[in-house]
Length: 276
Image 1 (cartoon, rainbow, N blue to C red):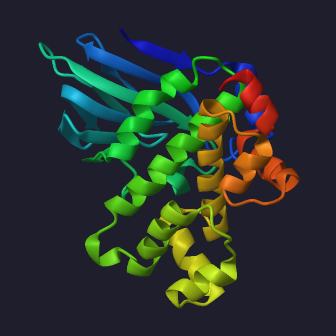
Image 2 (image 1 turned 90 degrees about the vertical axis):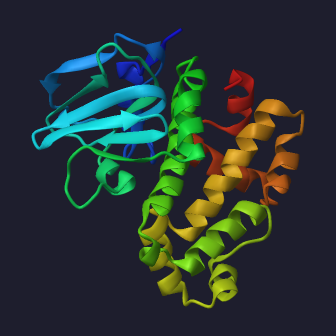
């Protein structure tokens, strides 16, 4: 069964006051299962929305002013805003896709298009696949908290995709080493000083290279991982908020709540109460 969520206009307006959603936000999401009717055969240009489509199964196509290209299972299609296009499953075939439309002033910088701003196809990662397919479930109860959780989920997957898409010679081994360390050790006491010493870079070089690779600062990335794991514990454990704060590496529960609200738009207590 197809599953589509279009974000209510009032939530989009509320998001404009949010530190994350004002820069990058979901606008609509969906999961089409073995769809033989999901075709966009007319040409269109979306002025403010970029489109991200993961082909889970079947076969489709995308066409822009420079030609026609096929999309196969495992491919990820990204269509920038303001680019004329059409796409769909090929006639007589079906495809299963997870998709999202995103908006925001930083969408171009976050998605990191190819040098030419046109639809492009790349191999999808497991993380981007899983994110796109679960977004409709996260957004089943529409609220500013679930919108921020879903957007943060996709944002993290895009950051991972951006790094995997980089040409091999452009990979920054030191930053990859640090990214993997943060994934494993987000709960340890962390500072910019300790991270820069760990990989032998100055703080200036660390911030510059980390931002170039992942689009956020090292400390922002640490906090994203901490809050992501905190949301899981709030949803699936009975740990107190103080216990969760300590488990993700933040000893001050008040400070944890401030960071959580800044990232998620609601307090940890509200998040748990709403059952996001």
